[in-house]
Image (tube, rainbow over all chains, first blue to last red; front, side):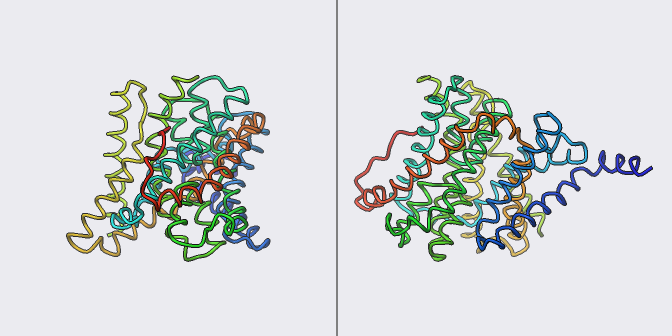
Length: 253
Length: 128
């Protein structure tokens, strides 16, 4: 009887249930972050928790869709699907103002172009060194080294397997987490104490959550400057990586 | 109304993705080429336009857009939860190295770019 009721819910309401499960993951992640006095890392922890959950689910089910392979969690396919992901990402551009865009000026634009190119090239070299040969896979991993959004968007566009997309997400998450941890430690050394440098920093690193978290841990006043260029980093990455990036990788490898 | 905000973002999303997919067909690699980036740019342009014309979106409309950007991290968490992480871990070093080297290298380049940027003498770099 209980299974029957549960089954009838799963079929119809899986999507709604997924909100509750994600909320639970977030609560746990932010609780842990608070416990170790790293509140700004809550979102990074939540993403790591998601990856851990997917890992455990993969061990149990032997499937390829992480937690979504367990029927009651099938709603994750929609909540974590590319449609909602892209829809919400687009909304983060709200609040970026044209004037500020112009004010960011040359330093910001140069840092964006150099930043995306640098991470992409490093990611591609490492993928190649570690034995990846398919240009589509190299491009996706390289895009993951840009951000954990650019990776899956690029991977979807090129049609690579879920493992490669997971690798690209993992690369982006490593970047995001490292940024949050290292920024306050390295701030003095790289003279990260003024708006211009903060904009350059956002443009070079680009992972919005990492930059926002890292700058908040360094000097809260620098956050909007870094976040502003960082917001464009993912946009530029999604524009350039699956197109020019892929064409270049395809030519070289 | 809050739904206006959701609708504006959805409109940008569709136009951006339409152009992105069109570009994909045009270049011949199929798929969606930069649709999300284009949609973001479009939202910035639309916002600037409305700002000029009527001083910005109404509070409720903007609440709709802010609602979406506030569920962006949970959506990414859900996305992470449905990935094939098992396979990723088995091929693991690449993720750690690609993410790690890119981050630390980029950080060390920050002072160089801030200097170059303020001198206004740079041409940029190769786009890749």
